[in-house]
Length: 138
Image (cartoon, rainbow, N blue to C red; front, side, top):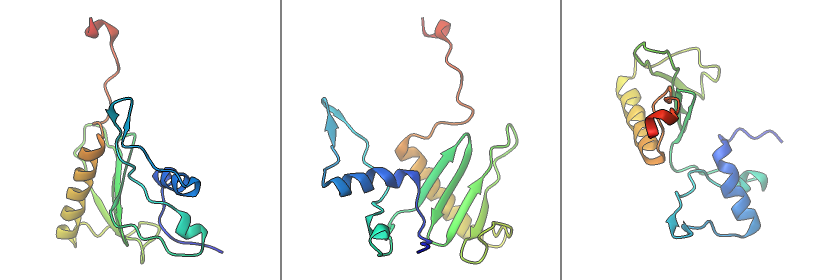
């Protein structure tokens, strides 16, 4: 059976925790652990639909994105050029050919704010990440 639910790598840990009947720890060795961001994929594996309640944010090598229901925003890393966000309706444009950012600025701005909130919460670092210089740490 082909399933079209949106999922991401971050959904694996919640899936394994649920499958094992385990509890994800809040602390380890006196240190607070960041809560899991993903959702369990067990519903998909058992024939039910996923119910993702929060938008799914991502960042990889300076490329940014957020998926919220049928909507997706992306922003490719462009070096020193200003960042440009694009908006897509994934139900009607799965190949991301029709950028709706100019036609729907309120939706775009709302999703960019959601991305920023997610990025602040999980500690996304600006790209490129500066190289470590041991001389500067002395």
